Structure formats: C-alpha cells, structure tokens
Length: 115
Image (cartoon, rainbow, N blue to C red; front, top):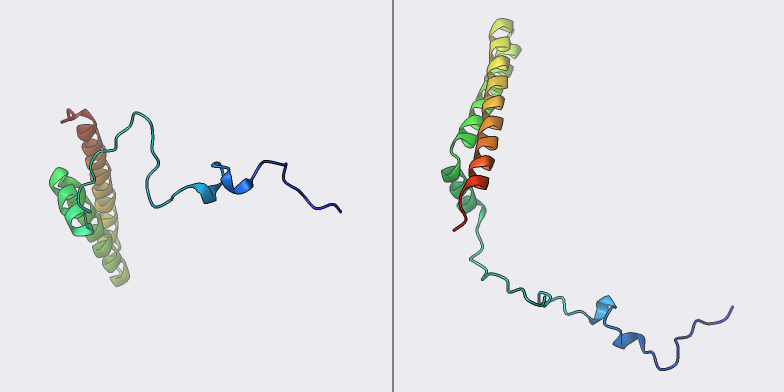
C-alpha cells in the first residue's frame, strides 16, 4: 500500500476551507451585513415576566389546565367519578383556551408593526 502524498506546492495547513483555519472565537464576516448590537443577556425570570406581560392569557390557561387536571385526578382517586369527568372536561376547555391564547399572541405579534 502506497502512502498518501500531498501534491507538490499545496500545503494542507494553508487551505482556508479546513475547519482548523477558522477563528471560532469571533463571528464570521459577511460582506454587506452588520449585526445589530447585542443587548444584555435576558435571564429566565426576566423573559418569563416579559412574555407574561405580552400575552397574559397563556399562563392563565396553563394554570387553569394544571388545576383542573390535579383536581380531576384527586376526585378520580377518591372515587368521585362524576366530579372527575367534569374536571377532565374543564381541563379540555382550559387546554383549548390556552391554544387559542397562543395563536392569538402569535398573530398579534406577527401583525404588530416593526419599530
């Protein structure tokens, strides 16, 4: 078996298409594009509060769904089948409300004029 050799005058380390030649600590330079300035990093609590203010019905629907599910499971465990069925129906209603709130929020965000 012959050893693989590189062509004469072609050094592999000077080839810019190799991943070792890219500087991964900086973003790539794209001609004609200037990225917007990076705002401060937003934590989980800040993002949650901002999203809740933008569309307050989604957390309300999620909370209602969780409450109906929990109460329905408790009623089921205690043997109250009629109450359990009513809570499962309430859960379905709360889930539908949450999905509608999500869709309404997405639509209102998409139709909002750019600033």
